[in-house]
Image 1 (cartoon, rainbow, N blue to C red):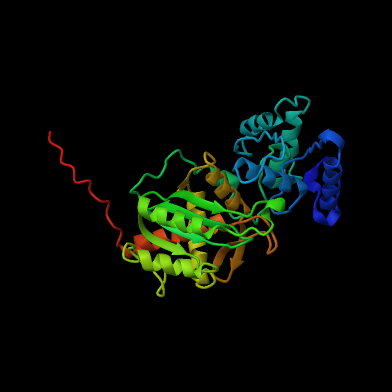
Image 2 (cartoon, one colour; image 1 turned 45 degrees about the horizontal axis):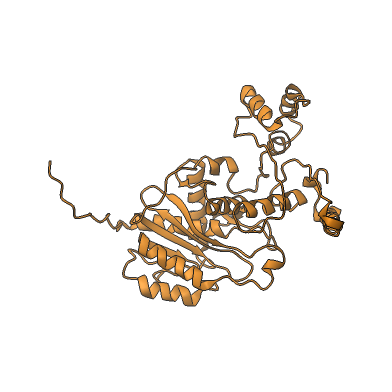
Length: 356
């Protein structure tokens, strides 16, 4: 299966891939295999190569069964394309042992200006980058990774975006003092037949929320109410006295994302700018939830409106979820409103006395 980054629905690529998969599946003794050779796909185009990348990502996150896939992709680290030495080093890194490639010729091809920067990055550096509609670039997101962790008692805000069957359900914490983003739960429908009839385990989600409230000093909690009204009402009733600020005039926790477009748009611009300027931190891909968050962030697309820059999926029918980003946005909005209120609760003293 060659150059599967070009195999899309409109040119019959999806149907061809399904036919091949069916034939391989019927092979006697499982002796048949497919080999897929491709450049880095264009995110959001839903090519066969992108579908393969998503399938591998979910397996790496522990969210799908082992399909027997061997995924081998050598990606260049971030480089300054304007620096010939850095570019050369990046091409050599992505080339690996394919030493028949003429790297000097590739450099001259990139500098010829015949193709967009993003295409050069995908073709020659094997970097998973998209066209201009991606909200946050992989380079900017990855540059904010840290080895730091939340500890019990940390002051945090929470953001929640819930689904039921198709959309993901996500709970994200953000540490108040330094904007450290920590996903606490990402629940997604499994791929394939395992996802038939799947419904999110609401008791598990409720348990994760209540565990977070017990472990951390939660000072603000913004939860989208859609599909989760009764749970949001219960969280608001149970924890309203512990929260420093309310999510909305109607609820201590509920913040309906179907309204307040101007506030959400400004919050989105604020969060994107913070990522671009290295003013937030996250756990990178060191844990499966960190990989899930990164996948959702990179799925998110720019959606301008009359107030500025908002966000959304690649299209309404896209299977590539962005709910963890939405939960992160709500956590960041909660933190911003908390800081602006001037009511941040100080850290509790341990009560210990030290003598010197």
